[in-house]
Image (cartoon, rainbow, N blue to C red; front, side, top):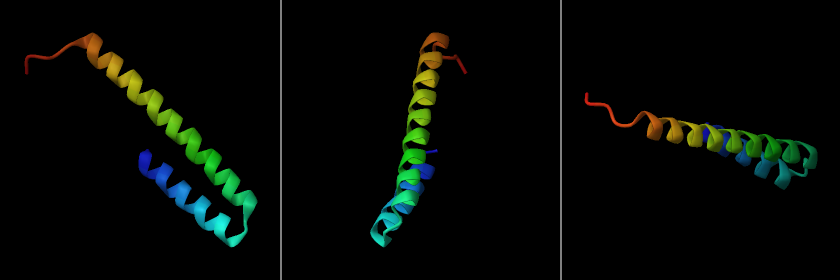
Length: 57
């Protein structure tokens, strides 16, 4: 997921340099949304891992 964030940020930077403000803005918003989704999923995974504890495998 974080590779998607980097991809959309690169698209936003290139679009901003070339003068496509609308595309740059949309790409930044998509990158922010995906980043926050990734952070939330990481936190949920960490909490579930702590609740389940370590396995003996």
